[in-house]
Image (cartoon, rainbow, N blue to C red; front, side, top):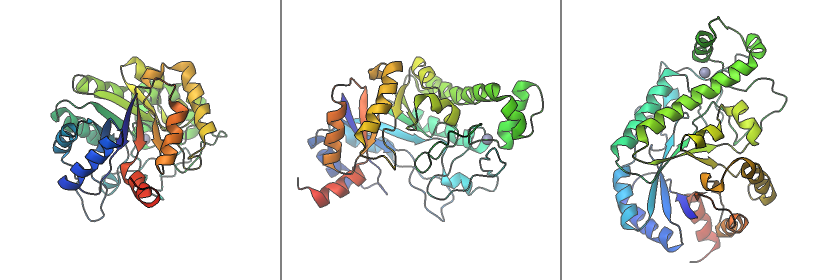
Length: 319
Ligand SMILES: [Zn+2]
């Protein structure tokens, strides 16, 4: 099982990256995942990207594997554009971002252009060991909200792009959520088709360049298609790996909860199709997780992230 760590810098600094990569390797990690896009900065109107080609080169020189993180349908900068329109819930209210999460509807043309632009950038990088597609789904802020099982319809999205697309697929005008409730099986199937088409785009375009990993929120497997439109089994059938986020803001460190989620995956998947992501606060945390999963034959494991991990480690541990 290969052990990766997310490396999320504020900015690129060659020397500190080289030094960190050496430490990462010495700590026993096999590889690093870098974000493609730089973090959002207010006052900047154009998306900025890390020099990932150079970062990958340094990673390989350090004897590590390299992966790229694409944040697909979540982008604060797109929200700043005049032509942007926010996702809409079943009550007709637009998404109101309270924290960092700025979801973009996967049917929004701005979001689609952005997504395909990201795929182009990876294509131009040449060979990359892995590409982790995050937020490739309909909006759902799992880091802050639990899925309310009282929901009769998925929380998002009912924006004009979604409703128009769905109407044309059904061959009748659907204009309000009440109608959608009556057509729920079709609506759910259509949503999953939207996400699946995006996965096909990535697969067809990048198949020869990289292995695709698709991250999924830490929901019960049965709730994933409902809340997000994601069909993990179909992703695997299309040659992708699945990265369930085995952590939750309210459940970090709860190993029983992780066992429970993993049990669900064990029933449906070969373990070598999984690439789970853990958020760890320190090395102690990490060791607990690793002990828990040591008997699983995962394709790999991603630890989130070097920056939080090393900050905590330098306070609590000496190495
Ligand atoms: Zn929408």
